[in-house]
Amino acid sequence: MSKRFVDSQIKSLKPSDKRYVRYDDGGKGFGIRVEPSGRKTFFFEYRFDGRNRTMTIGRYPQTTLNIARSKALQAKIAVDDGIDPGLERTKKKQADREAFTVEDLAKEYIERHAKPKNKSWRVDQARLNRHVIPAIGRRKAKDIRRRDVIVLIDEVMEHGGAIANRIKTLIVSIFNFAVQRDILDASPCISIPNPFKEKPRERWLSEEEIKIFWNGLDGAAMDGSLKLALKLILVTSQRPGEVIGAEWAEVDLENGWWEIPSEKTKNKKRHRVPLSNLAIQILKEVKTNSIESRWVFHSLSSRRGDNHIAKESLPRAVQRNLNIFNIEHFCPHDLRRTASSWMGSIGIRRENIEKVLNHADGSTRGRHYDFYDYDKEKRQALEEWGRKLESITTGEPTGKIIEFKYQD
Image (cartoon, rainbow, N blue to C red):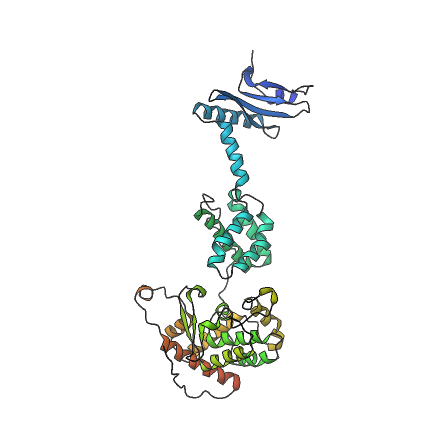
């Protein structure tokens, strides 16, 4: 009388000089092969399209009897439904081999999304190389679970809460990109909160600190172009990345304009920056001391070729010279905040300061109805701030604001 396999029976099968097979219930279909080496492998035999076929299920004991029998039953059902289970298994293995690893996905994200759309893509690349790729880079992206992401973010917390937030945001962006590109069916990052609650930066320099910083630049251990770039950030209240990425073709010194094209601005809108007398003085000094280049702040590094100075050069230069400035820690972006705060303190209207800063107007009116350029108001704001800044740095009282005559 035939009997169904039991685990004790499988364990008791001994190797012989030749390979042999045993079938479940004494019939064809689900069985096990025993090799002379002692290796035991479950299989399922079936007939499809007029041909006898064999599908390997798994090696015992890594594949248990119950799991093997369940897979054999699923294969039988597939055959009854007109599906070749062996072919489907082969396709699945091929798909698994070709599936994106997390490292593959990260490379695709950088090339197709970050580089075209994010000016700071190199920062993303560095963060991936340091925190993400070493941890889960070799794993298949489709196998990553929510728990895996949470564990990774917890590990990054050892480097600081702020960087953990950035890594979490980056991972979410990468997996959302994978879903949009139909690389994955779903993201494992749903409802993962930021691990750290950050306080918004409120650092801006006082009158005394501005004077110390401005005059301290003369003795600071940094290249002259970095000194002038930091000054221009404070004078114009523009973003550090926009300042160092400025090109001479965008600057009109004669009429006092710097036009930042839409592809360089954060809100993707063209931004005209009126150049105050102080800004023009700085730019003329840059031009006098610079070599022939399209960039206002040309990099002196041969490795970068004909390029602007690296964005990370500014915060590094400030950090290295804090002992010379001898004031509380600040970063280049705080100079932008300092300028906008001081413009408010001398009575410039908030809406005009927002236009100087090129902040996006989220209101319906701002998005669809307000096409006035505010050039006159922006110029007045920056001229007044420039004169106030000169008063602070020189100790001389602010004179009467003289309206700047400009051409559109």
